[in-house]
Length: 187
Image 1 (cartoon, helix red, strand yellow):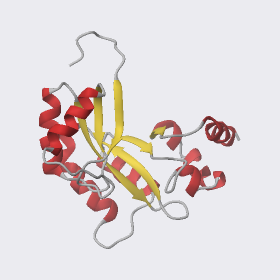
Image 2: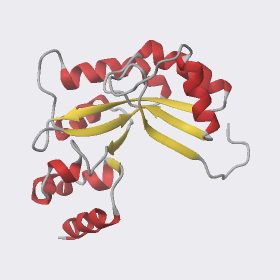
Image 3: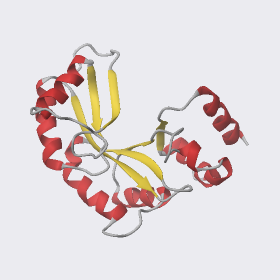
Image 4: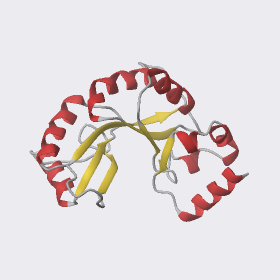
């Protein structure tokens, strides 16, 4: 896929589709339009992170993405049971984990049960020996790290080295909040 060795790539690891209630689309050729929009934006790696996973839709999108040399990864935006009203986290898996994703989601939510905490989800994935990317979503908005938790509340995550070994990134963090966050970690 990457014939030039090192090269700069545009990446979007937090995308929704028509399978997610937050996404609006009112035309007929969703899959084609979606992949063409990624291609036009020169996105080379992308992740579908709906709040619920739609395997059939992902496989259709992935087939079209391959034709455009876009690496599409399956994922989910999971609400974990941390903070005042829950926290959104993106879990991204390899393309060959499509079947596992449904199992993962059912074990993190179940039917009619509350979601697990971030610590419980990480423990579950570690027990399963799964590789994944974890990004805390929209950290400055509702259901985001800086809105839902006080620094003292994520002290446990710091002690467990989650920010060093598990959490790859914080999405949409301002420089001011990153500075406050770094100061808290230094404590």
